[in-house]
Amino acid sequence: MRMEYPAKVLVAWGEAISGHSGIRDWLIRNGYPELGIFVFALHLKPDARQWLMDHGHPHLMAVIRGIEGDEQALDWLDAHGMQVLRKVAECGGDEAALQWLLREGRRELAMLGLKMWSVKMKIEEDHQDPHKYPRD
Picture 1 (cartoon, rainbow, N blue to C red):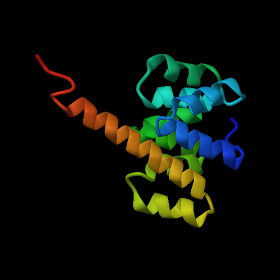
Picture 2 (picture 1 turned 120 degrees about the horizontal axis):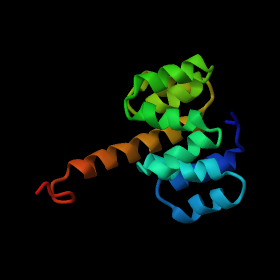
Picture 3 (picture 1 turned 90 degrees about the horizontal axis):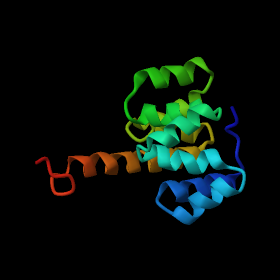
Picture 4 (picture 1 turned 135 degrees about the horizontal axis):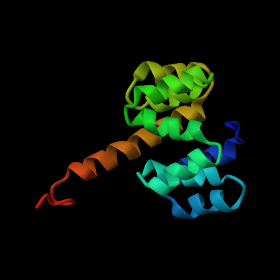
């Protein structure tokens, strides 16, 4: 399970997570399909979530599930030696996880975790807005 990417790819992934569809599509077409598809999975697209699982990226799906509060996903990351990714999943809601990433020299991943968290909170907010999703 590959999780080592050049810094410029991590920056591009962050831009894709923040909503830049052109960069998301570039990632998909240029050797990083898992990072582009991750963006769709983060936005609750079932086919993208399944793609991550089917194509050898369960760790990325576990990060998303961890952000969503799934403790089993966080435990899975730990059990597979992916403590850094667990901290990425937790850092938006856990100051200690954020500080751990920064202390470990994982600034890019800390920023990615915060972006992921921000996107998930916006999705939650949108789903709770009665004007966007009327209940009748």
